[in-house]
Amino acid sequence: MTHLLLDLPPMSAAHFASIEDRVARLLGTRQDVVITQGEALLPLEGAIRATAGPGTTALNIITGPYGQTFGDWLRDCGATVIDLTVPFHTAVTAGQVRDAFAEHPEIGFVSLVHAEAATGNTNPVAEIGEVARAHGALFYLDAVASIGAEPVLPDTWGVDLCVIGAQKAMGGPAGVSAVSVSERAWARMAANPRAPRRSYLSLLDWKERWIDGGRTALPHAPAQLEMLALEACVERIEAVGLDTVMSRHASAAAAARAGALALGGGLEPYVRAAAEAAPVATTLRAPGGTAASELVARALAADPAAPLAAGGGALAGEMIRVNHYGPGSTPGTVRACLTALGTAMSGADLTVNLPAALEAADKAWR
Image 1 (tube, rainbow, N blue to C red):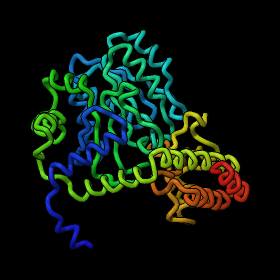
Image 2 (image 1 turned 60 degrees about the horizontal axis):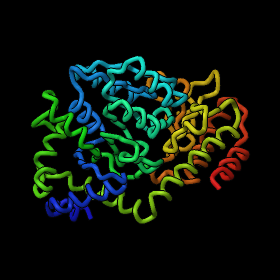
Image 3 (image 1 turned 45 degrees about the vertical axis):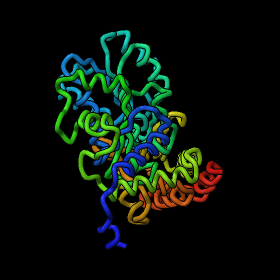
C-alpha cells in the first residue's frame, strides 16, 4: 500500500477542480472556492493580508485565542483594529456588534471565529452577518472547527471569506484547507496594493492563474495525498449525510455536558449557556482548588487514548477540553472521557458519581 501511495500519477487539474466543487457543495456556496495547500492558518492569514491594510478599520471579535491572532495580523497589515472582546465562557451577541458599528461607523471589515474549539463557545454568525451586511462591511469567518459539526452557510449569512479545515469535525487531513471568496472580497483584494503576490499566501495568484484560466492548469504540483484524503472525507460525509454528521456532534456535546454535570465533584461546564456551547468540543471548568492540567494528566494516565486536553496558556489552570469531533463524536468517546476524569478526580480526593455521569450521558445522547 505504501508503495502504491508513493507511485501515484500526478493529480490532474480536472480532479483537483472536482474536489473544490465537492467542498463548495458542502458549504452550499456559489462563491469561488480555493483549496489551499497547507493547514488552515495559511488561508486564514492569506485572506486577512489580501483584504486589509492601511485605511481599513476592522472590528475584530475575540471569543478565544484565534480572535487574538487575527487582531495581530490585522495590525501588522496596517489596519486600524477595534477589538470586541467577550468573556471566553460566553458568545458575542449581534447587539454588541451593532453597538460597535454605532460607535465606529467607519468599520469596513469584521473578523469572527464561528466555533472556538479552544474555549468551547460558538457564535451567532447569521445574526452578525446581517449586521455586517447592513453596514457594507466585509465579513471574514473562521469556520475551521465548526464545519461538519454545525451549519456553515456563507452565502445565506453574507460571509465574504469563509475558511475551513478538514481536521476537526470533518475527520479529514490537517495539511489542506479551503476558503470561499465572494466577488466583493476579490474586488477588495484587487484594490489592495499590499495584497500578497507571487507568494504562498496569495489568493490573488490562485484567482489569476487558476480560476480566471478556467481551472485547466494548476499553478503548482498539488499536495496529492492530502487532496485524496480530503476527497475521501468529503465522500464519507456525503455518504452518510451532512445532517447526520452534525447531529452526531450535537449529541456528543449534549452527552458530555450532561455527564460532566452529573459526575459532580465541582466539575461544571466552562461555557455557561448550553446554546452558546460549540458541538465540536466541550470545555469544563476544573473544580476549585485543583489545576486543570494536573487533572488531565491524571486522566490520561488512567486512559492515554482519551481525547482530553487542558486549556492553553493561562487557561491551563482552569479549563479541561473534551474533544469529541470527527471519528470521536461517539458515545464511547464521551464515556471514556467521563470515566478517565472520574478516575482522576477520585485520585484527587474529590467525590464523584461515575455511574450517574454515564447514565446521564447515555440519556442525553438518546
